[in-house]
Image 1 (cartoon, rainbow, N blue to C red):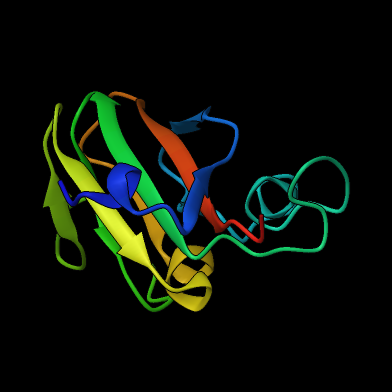
Image 2: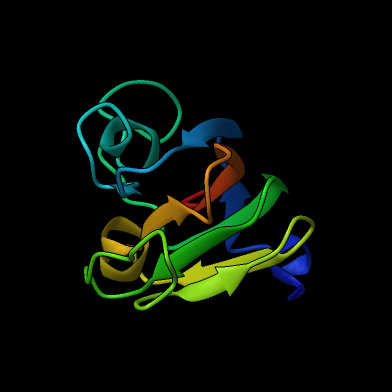
Length: 118
């Protein structure tokens, strides 16, 4: 994990949990996008420039860049329970996709970070 919390240019947004089933999801999906590019609140009008993504239940596959991962692992990088993924750059955060490994739904905990203008 990086020292992003020690970088005074970043401020943490609201942490949220996403369920990851057998259909790939991304942070750019409807409903999730507002959490990384809010239109209200402290970070209204800003886009997340970094994000911590922590696999919290059941292993997953993820892909950066918008390619869709596949449940059987023929496409995607594995994320085990406890693994932390740090993404930088709004385009990468928005495009990353996640899908469960096997038959059990997993979950990720996400904390977006925004450039602090203060």
